[in-house]
Length: 409
Image 1: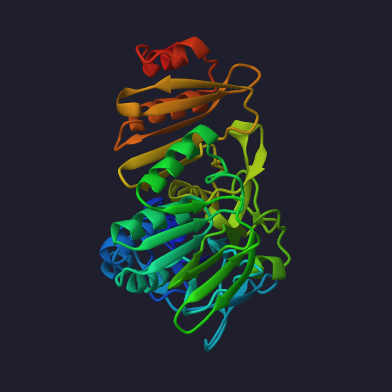
Image 2: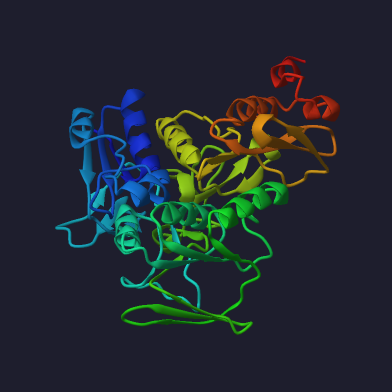
């Protein structure tokens, strides 16, 4: 009987395990995770988990894994891959774990800053449910929270913390928030809303020193400003977890390097989700690494199919979203290579920015508005990007022209 092992018990790994069964694999499946929880969704960590202290939103409960014949090893650390023997070496285990096919969905970990070493006290990051609960315990006392990093995680946490009554200061080292993949026009809407809600945003912030004390964290900026907080959360991006792959001699390129079928440089080892970089055919084979819920879900399923000998490629349009206060931001596609940006205004101050390349092809769409104001049009734009159709800028800008009509053109 064949033995398939998945290292990384997150969304991606769990989806891959179930997909193997759904596609008819009848061998053994073992899912190995380092956390104490069954696989859960991470997007609620910076929102519902902080605001309501909700339990992890599981991909499936223990009965679901058992019914599918998936063995789940929690609190288990993989320390090495022995490719010659096709075995995994586990910490505190009686013996190695053999595999015929191996999938790595090891995710990513928060990036540490030289001046802000993470601790279990008042300097933290937000990656796991345990992190969210620890942060929430501080926020319940209406503390002063400082966040380093004006990306999605930092801004979503700021919104959640304000909802709990905390005083929030957010430090961003670059001239604006959301500088990675979000148009400046949309980022300014987000920044303005945070300021309206009472968040102190300091961009171009250069941190000179951070001192963690028993009862507070003192931060000094290069311009002389001093900030004293009850808690500091560092949300300065993440680093793919490639340690065991790199030690095993697998190719690394901004993550575990895989081909269009998610196969690593070892034909019996695959990788998927946040930990890997892959060529995206839709963008002429550009190698990218995506940290998103949908990518984790889809690549888990692709990886399962290809572990069974199929040759399915990752061709989905990258898609991201963020909820902050009553605003929802959605982005489809990649704007790199844009030569023309077109704005479409929608009702209630919502709008979408379309990015076209030199050939007139729509390559990205970014929208922001209250609730689901932009969701339908972003979905249609996503289909237009996938279809690689040429787009008329005048029609894209006209709100009375239905996007679906452009898709059919």
